[in-house]
Structures are given as C-alpha cells and as structure tokens.
Image (cartoon, rainbow, N blue to C red):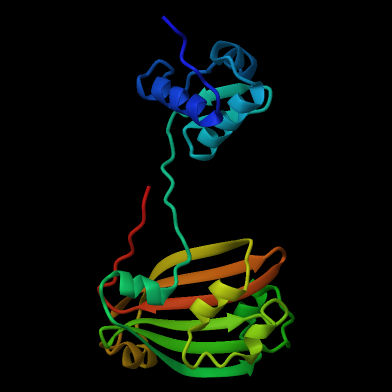
Length: 233
C-alpha cells in the first residue's frame, strides 16, 4: 500500500485536521514535533511549520516555544469581519441604495475623538455625516472623522454623491483597525435622521482604522431599529 503524498502545506493541514477531528490527537494532547511529522509525511519541515501555524491562527492548535504544540483544549471559533461598502451591502440584499450627505466641514474634534485617533487636540479634522438608505428607507447614519495627514486627497472630496465609506475603502489603505459593537438609544436628532421614535434601540458600530501608527478615520454607524449583523465562523 502506497503512503499518502504530502507535497504541500495544505495537504499536511488536511491530515492534521483529520487526526484532530477523529480524536487521534485529543484536546489538550501534545502532538509530534515538526521534525518527526516532516519525516512521517515525507516533506520539508517548513511545510509542516506552515500547516501547523495556520491551524494555530485558527485556534485549533496551541503552540508555545519550548513547550511544543498541543491540540487546543477549548478551540476558539473566530468570526470573520470585513469593512464593507454599505452601498454594495444594501444592493446585495436586493434593495435600492440611496445616499444623502448631511454635512461636511473641518472642525476641531471633541477630545475623546482626538485622543482615540492620537491627533493633536487642537488640530482640525474633516467631519462628514451622511445617511445611507435602502429602498428609500433610512438604513444607517454615518458620523465620521477623517485624518488629513493620512487621507490627504480625501480633504478635497465633497462626499456629495459618493460616501466617505466607499471613497476611503477605494483610495486609502489601512493596516489594521479596532471595532466595537453596542446598543444605544436614539437621541432626538438621531431619531429624526433615522425616522424612528426618540429613545428607540439602535445598533451601533464604532470603528477606528489605522495605517501603521497613524489613524485614518474614526466612524460611528447607527443602524435603524431592527438591524441585524451576520458573519461567518
């Protein structure tokens, strides 16, 4: 009987996954080291390393220097979140997209904003507020601050017809970000914009994106009552 061929890291990963799911290697159990696995699979040690690292990043393996690699005792399921273009999100639902810019101006932001974006407390940023609509009904209220040091060309944009959400994702790169989800009550102004009752429960997303050490933009998205967010595990 011929031994199975493990010519790339994906095939090694599939075999490791098979052994984990079949409980050949049980939760919390130490698995063979890279050198032994490379010998068994007939492949390079670097191939085994890449496969195990990928599984560690997905939460299925626990790798520690000088302590070896174990099957995670309690594997962590990770959700995948993307920064979406709201226009495409709405159109993918089969709905007609609409957009209204509410205001655009340069202003010194509140200290909470400049503090989180790590900009100088007296430095003006670009403040853009807009409403996204689905089938002529309010969908999300966007309240955004943009750092001119990073998004230089964005300071000359009017955002009259294209949202800052879509423009930034198209033209300004980012390396990482921070995101928070919460529930909040609609203020009188927010209720008016989203066409709902004052103190209605709203779903809020607060997001801060960075390009290296510089903040690109900080945005709060408030969704109309009844909104749901879906992702994949």
